[in-house]
Image (tube, rainbow, N blue to C red; front, side):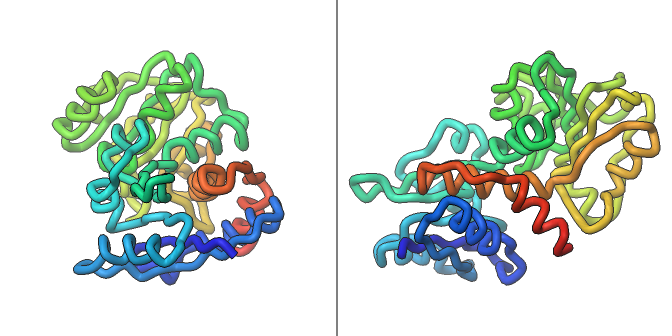
Length: 266
């Protein structure tokens, strides 16, 4: 049975084993997917040991995505642009190949599962950290009308603007409404709302929070209070896993039933 694993610290809370077990059942694949507690001093050695012992693929989560990026022999274009790696596999000659499926997973969730097109849309993305950097290339691949990145520290948004040729802005300078607003900041984790003006949203605006929870996030509650519709990032979690599964197994699993199952268990 082919062996796969997700490495991070902490890792016991990870939903990835359950997600990949469902994918394997759906697609009739003989795989085992477990967890590995990453060690600060030994992360690179843990990765190499896993593959040398016959492991087929590895997912990487916090806080090791940048270190995984640095140790890869070969990187996908989207991993290069993201500056981080969440999916590892071995090449034919034993080289470590790194990819980043976060952005592709989010876009697939938005466009194919939630049926919200991004093409021709005026998009606002909130935040300028690693989560946002990881999704910008797949968002641009959808041919939006424009992409604006807003952040409290404008220089961080400007740095992303230089890499991806998008508009960088402070929150105060934003002029709405936008067609789509994606919250990639960490504010939802602490139950806080970024300093967003109500005029950024109209009844036609669609909002997406990369974070998720049993209850709607503060960002989604704000958007819904202004008449907007939207969704949280549970489907992004499943989507990035589906992209990794496709890379490894060359078969694409159905995401919607897995999202529904996870939602029912929350």
